[in-house]
Length: 251
Image 1: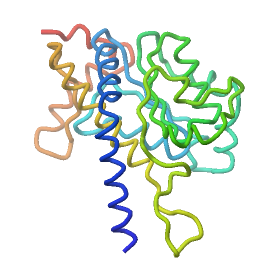
Image 2 (image 1 turned 45 degrees about the vertical axis):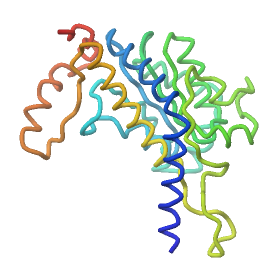
Image 3 (image 1 turned 120 degrees about the vertical axis):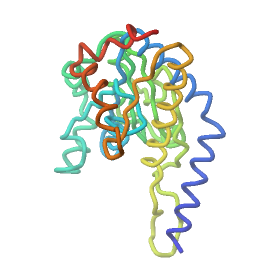
């Protein structure tokens, strides 16, 4: 029952995150809540399968509203995995992405990369920090430490970010040894990243409440009252300028 073994493996990874990473998750949430309370936005960026983690909290029921995923379609594997892989290693690309993102000093950025060794994720972290943005990494520290950086600085993502949350996955990502395949099967990093992003999100919501700010939370449009509840936030965050008004919502 390989499926059962995978689910148990996933449970073990999530338990390790809960046991070892709550301090980092809380630190990330505090930084984000402080940013949002002063009118900042939360940006997320990932390449390859990590792009799925970056879009997870956007317009998501039960998640924060002032969230902006930075999606570079050429690096999402949807069209050409070979091209996406080559672009992720391209020095200088991240600066172009940042210039086009709308990110500003005082914002927060979560950079997701399981390996944390390729140029674009590292440059996103370094470039955002140089612009006055707090950078949070979600990465596999074990994988990164087992490999050399592909960025000229020699840094890996966990060495370039302000705050690091370890996704607790192993080098190579896949978890299961089996006679069915000569290599390990069953990846863990995406589900781990999504769990971490949502854990950060709910921590931020709690911290905003403690600060006396009504947390801007998305409600599902597929339950009664969802559309009306969401309408006020749609209006408040209709554009990037209005999205920076959270600080004025203190009671």
